[in-house]
Amino acid sequence: MIRLHTERLGLRPLCDEDVAPLAAINADPEVMRYVGDGRPRTLERTRARTEEMMRHWQERGWGTFAVELADTGEFIGCIVLAVPEFLPEILPAVEVGWRIGRRHWGHGYAPEAAREVIRFAFEDIGMDRLVSCVYRGNTASARVAEKLGMAVERETVVPDLAVQCLVYELWAPGRTAE
Image 1 (tube, rainbow, N blue to C red):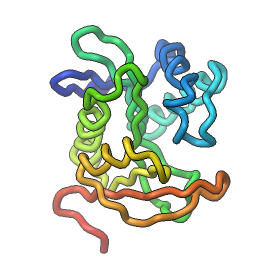
Image 2: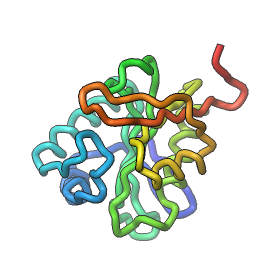
Image 3: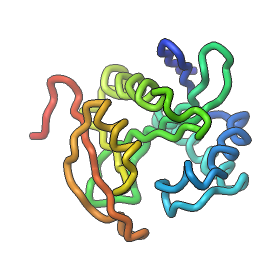
């Protein structure tokens, strides 16, 4: 199994044991405010989505990472590495995204974990470019994207949700748009 590490965090593919703690995070309206339709998710919806993410790992060899505190092993969120099918105009693309439980906000965990997943995507998988889709008004995620060195590539609207979105992008070192 793939395991990544930072100074304070451990990252690994999501598994069945992550459903309950992820469902608790997904049930928080503040955490989910800028995710999908903005509504909290049920345990059942979280379980179904986690199963999809686990299949993604089996099919592609990459996907969503569970984020744990290195010193305790506590699950605090996830870093998503997925195809942003909800925004067809930017495809083909792979998105990096982050969701950290609210009680762990403000500690720099999202950029720390995302930075390691970006390294994995560029160096271990060989991806050329990553995007991050940030809903307008989500200043915290915009700051994370900027800390990661991402720049706004375009402004658009998520079709099925009619939500304004900024698409940030980051190219692998030595690679650029052709």
